[in-house]
Length: 466
Image (tube, rainbow, N blue to C red; front, side, top):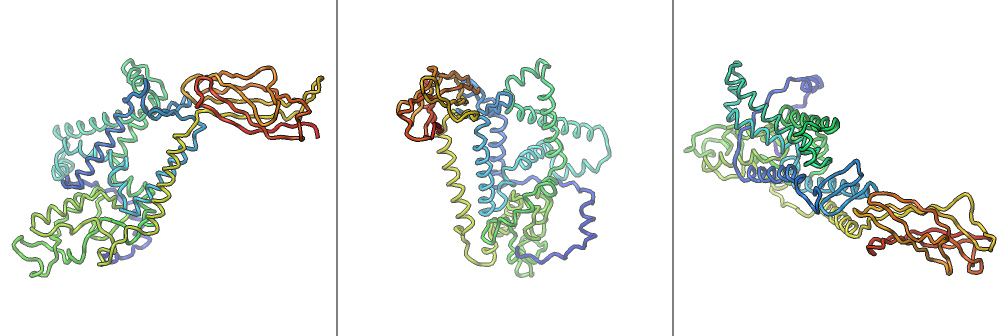
């Protein structure tokens, strides 16, 4: 942004920065509108994560990815491995949403909804409740080990571990019914795989949110590296207004800044103290910035105390800082929004019209056709029916496309259990006088006898003599 260019680092300085010992960051607690929005987002997301496995829907868990039975229950809809297409479309929609919101307002995902941000904020909240404010935490870490330090550190890490293990347990509860999971834990009969994944995700949460924190965002997350390709001069980002704020300097509240040659920034560094990644936003937009807007709340609070206008640090655009008009509608946002809307509509329409049935017709390739002693022409097929409904069904099989074409052996019905595949050999017969050409298009129709809405047709061919 409108900031002096930093002196380029030499190769040696870059290499040394990669191996420098981490300096722990103590984010200062901040209050304000964006902090409230962030807390609201965290409560909503954590409430959904921890509460959804306990919600029941039609006698079963509302969201359950039942891998052993190859069933994926999402509210009132059950998906099967054959519906993998929908997962691919959902991933496309997620990517398009990320592109759209980044082009519109920068790293909203990182600042308000990323799991790393959400759980880190929870861990920071626990840390403040036990160890106190930022100065108290710094004093505690610098002090010698004594009974008070052992107590606070032990209590903090104990609380972190409890939350982490409960997080791991909840995560596994999306794949194994969570009520059964708790039953097995209480009775000390939890299986080895469930135990492994509870511990794995629990300690992953403990390590990422408790210890790594901002290092995940700075060094491990690829999004920080390619976000620059998705933003432009009309993207809303968090920026410091240099024209108004510089020159920086401390002063008394009674002194008018312009009369003493200063800008509005009093150089209190509170915007740095509240930053969870430890950057100074006054140096311009940096890839480490996760867009949490804590610096905006902190700076606005200082400006109010000094009786200055708020907004020295604010959501704005490069063009706005340069005095140019802002363009909300521009090619990239329109294209992203259009593709996102179209893809979402097509997905909803596809799911609403989805038929929980798959039919596969395989012709007998050992012979093109057979002629019986009575002169009847036969073709042999194997009919595979996949019942993707939650109920067992008996299906009626019909064939059409040629006059007098019939199914031999009176095999017109097939029973298929829920989530199962059933196969049935079929012989199609026709009198040669109705066979007008050597091959003809036909169609198999499979319909559930107890539910006419579950029906599907598949084309095939009937072959005869030249």
